[in-house]
Image 1: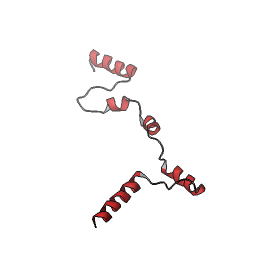
Image 2 (image 1 turned 120 degrees about the vertical axis):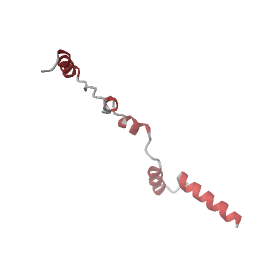
Image 3 (image 1 turned 90 degrees about the horizontal axis):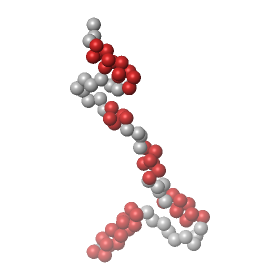
Image 4 (image 1 turned 90 degrees about the vertical axis):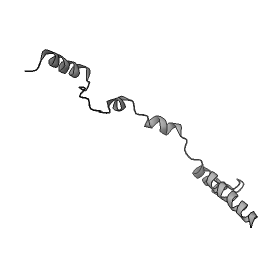
Length: 84
């Protein structure tokens, strides 16, 4: 037969929805935290490259769009060519 303290602890666990402490890590503190995926998705903007390329195809007046990576590559090639 369970002791009175054990019965009280069981009833309290059911009422408050807690997990009994058994000395084992359960990860409950991480599971209780609210999910942040939606906030992170809203924080990072959509890449501008596809939009810029689409506008570039439609309008010939718009100068050639290069991503940062492409610009770095071209600059690196230019410096390597200058060295000989």
